[in-house]
Image (tube, rainbow, N blue to C red; front, side):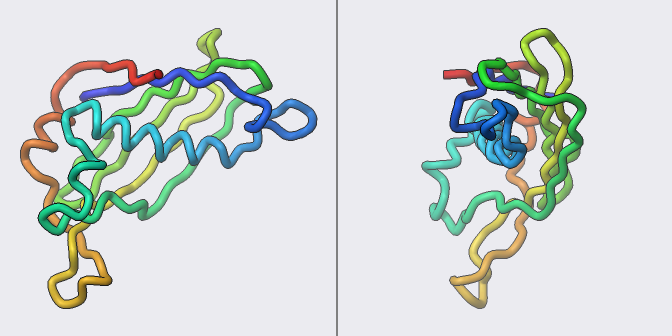
Length: 147
């Protein structure tokens, strides 16, 4: 499976007054990592939204398991890949490791490939994941998306 890596330094704004990460940041990082995964595999999500009825990949469910804390100044590597490809839905697995290789958290997101609903343009509906995206996500490879 195609994977992306992203390194993030824990900043002051990520932490509580004790210098420990405020856990909701993991959910922001997972969302960013999923979009970077699609970008890195060749699907320009930003250019495609609202083109040909495509509305994005909304989140259906997510979860995190925390294993160790992160602190101010730590560098965490987020490794992401699609764990399951359904017809119109997919599951992205995210692993968070501190720079010393300690796994600090593991998470997942269930998303749906969404397009305009045929009866109501204000609504969305699931649509089959395009073959070109499916092939790109299934191929082997790792891309570092750190900026």
